Image (spheres, rainbow over the protein chains, first blue to last red):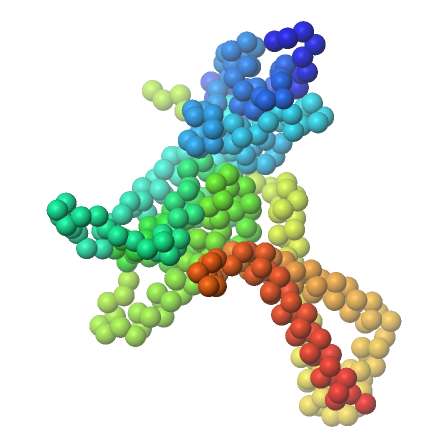
Length: 251
Length: 132
């Protein structure tokens, strides 16, 4: 670091399960330049000040979704947040809210991954085709129905922004429901009936009270609140339409 | 043996943690005031059916300084609720396409607010026309 470089105090909520009964704040003085992200600040701590600090990261460019954390109380990607933003030369970082802290800034994501698996986040072809029959075609309008929801990078910032998930983690949650909608809204997909059971459940879309903060913090403009609330309409239709079907075949 | 001992943080006072949550709680709380005002109107309807004396009593109650002060507060709450309701509206509906282009969220909010203002003005005009 150059002489006379600016420094910032990075307060980290640390938790080392083998020695801490509860998380404790530890502050590090970090020299920084205007082009340094919060993630780079943490990397500086790890490389030069304290090798025991744990945090997740990979791509450094808001693609992988690994480095989400609470930065001054807001869920943000640490690679997309710059140290220069904090004029008071002090910033506090903490593991993503509403998830258990595994260690330091590492949140436990087992619950999220289990839910993600449950919604079958892949295309279930509406009509199976052989390779020689060619690709599935789609109009730009059909693409537009789901495209924004396919931008999700599983960073879980929306879960850290959702008080309903924090209060009751049985709620499927914004990100996973947005991905569910991404496949249900795809004209090539035929898995809607299977997924609607998860939408209709109490812990599906109906646990959402339209706080809307999930969409506010999303770094990819996915707008999960929109996906969830559109599916309240779909769920209500699903419920009433089954009375119109012969034999009550609806799920 | 696993050394895992995940720490779960408390949610107590969660809504004070972020100004966004405070605004959400105000939106939800002002809904109760909207319901309360419906009760005030319902009381008026009941007094009307109970006869002239009861109706005049209800009107006199509305003219009291306390009632006017409460009404000003309820109006403020109602205006905030209307704004917050249309603010969240774009998130609660499927994408709307006009002439092949998607309608922006702010356009939907503005249309909702404009409709609320138009309905309020129309109501005032009707009341003025029917009034003494």
